[in-house]
Length: 587
Image (cartoon, rainbow, N blue to C red; front, side, top):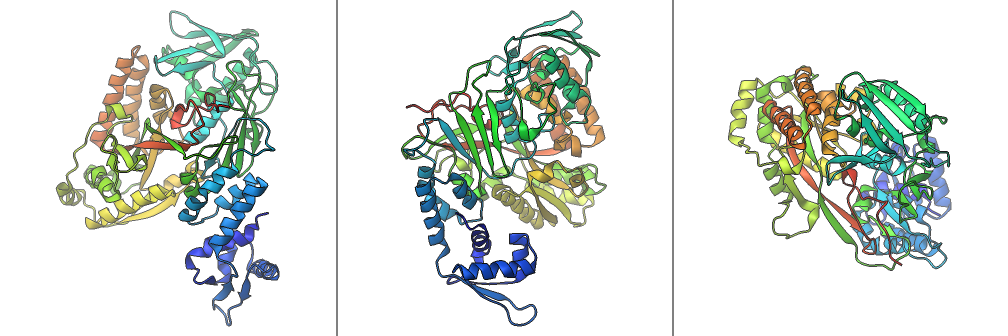
């Protein structure tokens, strides 16, 4: 069994270790073990009594203490992984992989780790996919979810009334098998399938649809915009729902295909720890460090070919090296799948702060400063499609739009920066630059900080994580922020959501004058009956955003997923994640 305190101690202090010796202060252990200094001393003495270390207290107030270890830490990590393999202890190994262990050690042990997550003679004959995630989950409430992985989980657990078909750009029947609309486009009638079952085996009825929509209408949720135009909902029979709108909305069926409006049971208050839906998978287990989805045998469509998908929380380094494995296959070299993400990375300004970011000349200076080609050269990235000197982790597509197909090259002119800063009146005041705490995000923020310093722009970097994402008070501190936006399978609905979702940074940081202009255009967007008409309005909005420098487009990431080569029919679904319901493992 993993000695959590011992391994966390060595992992967090390992960078300072020399010849298996570490000098430290007791207050450091408070942050590692979440305890008082008094308890830290007690734990050290227990570890010493168990032969794990030798503790030499510092002599005198403020003096450093010393720890001596009898074994090299790398050897202990390797021995522990071997023991986990022998005992088939997946959770214990995942616990170790959450610690800040050197990346090279994880790479060296990756064969054993994959072996541990593979076939065991005593295993049940289930098809189980194992995956690793590098952070804790935020919310799984479909009305509040705004982060891609959690949104993808919602799609596995629940079903909306309709389903969007990306290949044909149309909405297809799903829980509702037919839809009727009157001549005014104000009254929509949905005819429900019979025999659609929740994970509790209760049948879905019109009351469940009504209850789900009422829940969205009567909360201040980030996705309540999907139901804002609904005036009333009638349930004339068990399998019939009539929705009356305040005004015509030809785009309304796309709203009803949003996974945020997956139908929930009316008789059970929503509890994201006990998630009940109708989806192809049900929530079998959810803890701080593990998430298990199991196939729902009573699914009204095609049952998933997998039996379970198990997600283990590990460190960012471990997740980047080991991704999807199977529970019944021999060890092979991992396969990879590349996909240009239907999203983009960007830098935006907090227009609610009364400072230099309000000045258009300053924003234009930052536009020229954030040169993706210079950044790519500095990091050794290559444009997607160039000669493959190194595989996909370091590929990108320059962005000037929300989606790759509309993006073109944007010329950046460094020579203009000094004059633009002079016109703006910027005098070197520090600006808080927020960025995610992932290594790649830190690297990009450091690059901008250093490049800004060359021109006298003072950026103070502030890392944040996804648990901070939903915090309302975060906006009070931000001057500029790096972030990303990823589309679902329906790029047009996602485009609306980017500006209507209260959690997303466009709505939180854009100026009122900019949002009003965009919202007027979005009304025109919703009236368009053709794909081409909506694309035209989207292009107008993106042009406005570029001209006003409301945000600065960076790039479209090239996603690289690593998985066991036995896994078949690997396809990308919404938000750039695999469609778990279609994956299968040959026997």
